[in-house]
Length: 124
Image 1: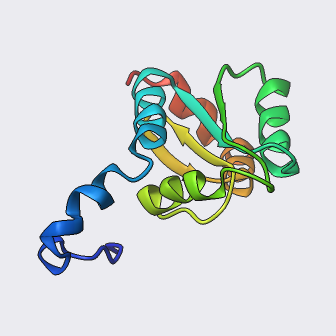
Image 2: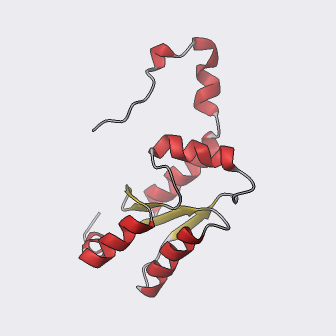
């Protein structure tokens, strides 16, 4: 099911660049990590769920890159750019082999089914 994204022709030309450049650096940093590394966890300080996901990966000796952007008290606008880019509403955002798999609950399900290890063992 495709996500709704406002068509560019429905955005006034005077603000298109402003929209395109809004917190672009944070999105580009995540894009680069996802292209480079097999597992990427994007989280925020003070949130126990990204820690839980990282502990799960650590317990299985699965290497990952962790990118942390602020806490509940700051950088929420910058994190919002990631939410708009991915469509995923919460943290962590977890990518495996370039694909957003969801958050911690989805990671736990992939581990339980063995799919995570199979995906990481496959070429790609």
